[in-house]
Length: 98
Image 1 (spheres, rainbow, N blue to C red):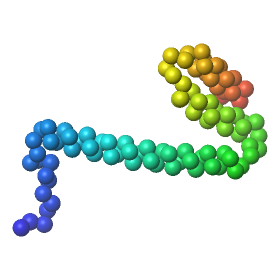
Image 2 (cartoon, helix red, strand yellow):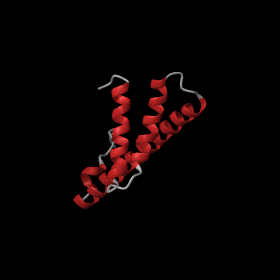
Image 3 (spheres, one colour):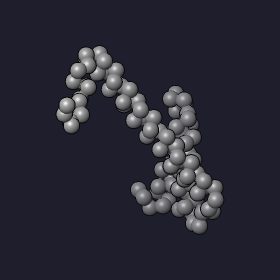
């Protein structure tokens, strides 16, 4: 008996290895999604509990909300996507980011 672990991946067929790779990738994506949701919930909690102290801070909150809104728009809703883009461009211009 050896002390080194046996690499089972070497003993699988190609189809089984691909299925395993897909399961591993899916598990990683799900973990990242949970982490992202946790960070998003924390950020939103902070937004709710702390008032903006300046116009740039208020604009940052508004940018966040507009990006959430835009992410939920249908791909063919170009009118609302254009409106969001114009407002975000205004924020950037007025804050000196452009």
